[in-house]
Amino acid sequence: MSKGRAEAAAGAPAILLKYLQEQNRPYSAQDVFGNLQREHGLGKTAVVKALEQLAQQGKIKEKVYGKQKIYFADQAQFDAVSDADLQGLDAQIVALTTKVQSLQQSCRHMEAELKDLTSALTTPEMQKEIQELRKECAGYRDRLENIRAATNHVTPQEKEQVYREREKYCKEWRKRKRMATELSDAILEGYPKSKKHFFEEVGIETDEDHNVKLPDP
Image (cartoon, helix red, strand yellow):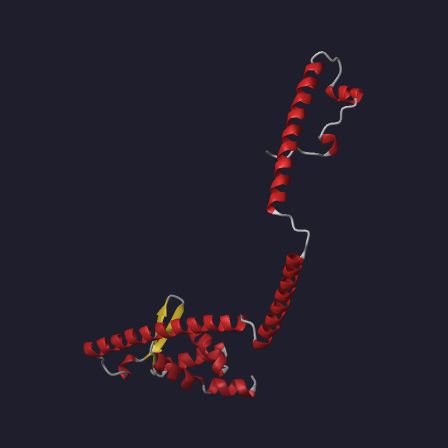
């Protein structure tokens, strides 16, 4: 055993006695070991021996539940507590619990604010962003001025005329396509070969052959 571990083991009874008296609740040897090993460097063997030693000396109480031993402070050393004292302690617990909940809520709000602040742009980043936006706006203004200064604008009257002509030609296109379809269907009723063969023989080219689609009305 190292010197440090030996010194820790020698001081274990005093450490455990103080801990059990302060906590004043039952613990197993494993619980005590888990709670104190990091702070005091106590090994599990040293904890078990110290608890058994304290129990044999009558400084703490030991209860056996099946295969497990439970250790706790001797209650005889504590002053009797009246009902009024217990009620006072309960009131303090309620008040402290409320305070803790309020502090936890405040912490959550502060954490949310901190998250917003850390995710926000810094002052240099904001200045750079503003410069880029101003440059972008200037480019849009130049484009707008060029559009306004152009002399090849289409007047509303010209635009309306284009739409009327488009509608006229599409209507005629639709009419002629229907007539051609009806005529070819009539011929095909007595034609001995396929429709495709007939179109190839006559030299008919369809809209589909040129990937052309009649616009919607």
